[in-house]
Length: 251
Ligand code: PGA
Image 1 (cartoon, rainbow, N blue to C red):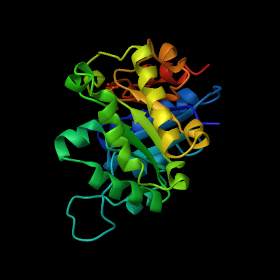
Image 2 (cartoon, rainbow, N blue to C red):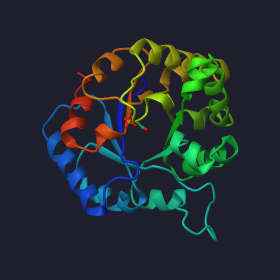
Image 3 (cartoon, helix red, strand yellow):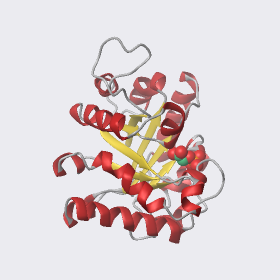
């Protein structure tokens, strides 16, 4: 059975001290509670190691927001997947729309990053999603299928180690959420595409998260959809009070 997951993406927010305080606050809030999903926080590189320490003994998993396409060496400013893994982090977001938009990440680069992450035992949370124009002109499914091609270079065994996140770009940080029907339609489309590429078992076992202005008020309806297995949360992950209701949406 596929996992239910609520993952935070802190983006370029929180200093080291703020990040540790946020992680400690989340750990405290979860203590003694029945948690019905996997909880993950993906933090800026600078905080990953300290957040891993801060959440020790809790259910919280930690990840980075990116990793290098390269293994090691003369790539000033880059952080390799093995460095991320050496902190004890278990996840890495790859192909977030902000990386695609501002850092020119394309399938070629993302195939390298996927391989780096998997070779170092990290679970990639691989993001796909259309921009507003592609939603409006009806090309969004072809766009998403094209983005999935990077993942489809993986063997079924490696694919099974990944999480997919559908994040319509027009819904990220805008307050506009895809309706649960719109999200479900794309999630079902992605799952069918995975089944066609691999097989029904791989598709059934893949967790597909929704991201884009997901919050406590809309999470229950989104998570009630048959193909939505959780959320990738930006803004609402930056405060314990707004992140917890999303986790608690999994009854
Ligand atoms: P948002 O971001 O929840 O702030 O819309 C989601 C994301 O970009 O992962």
